[in-house]
Image 1 (cartoon, one colour):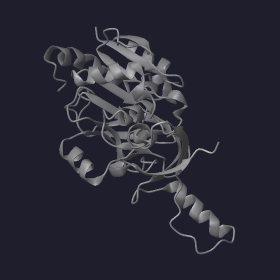
Image 2 (image 1 turned 135 degrees about the vertical axis):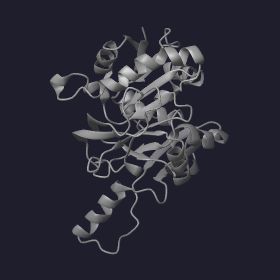
Image 3 (image 1 turned 120 degrees about the horizontal axis):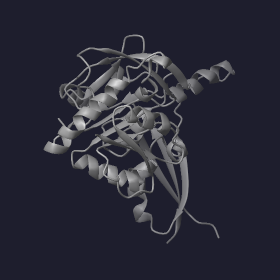
Image 4 (image 1 turned 180 degrees about the vertical axis):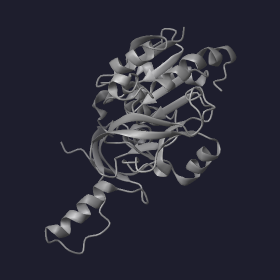
Length: 230
Length: 79
């Protein structure tokens, strides 16, 4: 059974929902920011929140924590890493994902259900989806405007690294190219601003987020066996 | 020699700066005219023993070079 590890930083606030979402498809446990090893987990999911208070810049400080040093090694070895919201910000600051997250164009904290279009299903994060599938997932953030310099952006688009886009009319934060989630070149690290862990039960209006966790659960053994996440 | 450093961090030119725009739009509403190119950034002050580390600190943590420019202003520490 796939083992998920969820690093908790001072200021994380979505770790419990993330833990429960992962527990629906595998085993899940919390990791602490001072942990130096990942306790043998197959998949790391960095939760949303305000790591270390988001002082200085969102996600800027966690890359220097012991647990993130271990996550960087896990990623370098082909291990799977998912970052949600603040987790996405942390992964860009750590240099594990390209680009950066900037303040929303409306300068407001915004919480709303958004529709996302799945752009690429040939990844460990999305292979349980069908091409151009529409997912309904909540988003809640102040700093979620995805940005990458033009050259970097063109390369990412050409390589199929944009996995999720906001559907027309749903890009409230002003992200470049309507980007909601991107992966790295090796396709074993993925980050997105909306919160799939808050959409895993029909009781909350949508369980579309479960597809991403289910994809990870079935992809992890393959990634481990081959050392190649694709 | 120990110095005091002030690091001025600004959004890079060409990147949409909604904070700056909000301020720029608010100023005429208060009767201030002829204001343009408003940008809102951050300031980090620190005292440091060895100023050769300053650039590296800025690149690694204080600024994100992908989206921000920084400028270092040094001054002696007053006794």
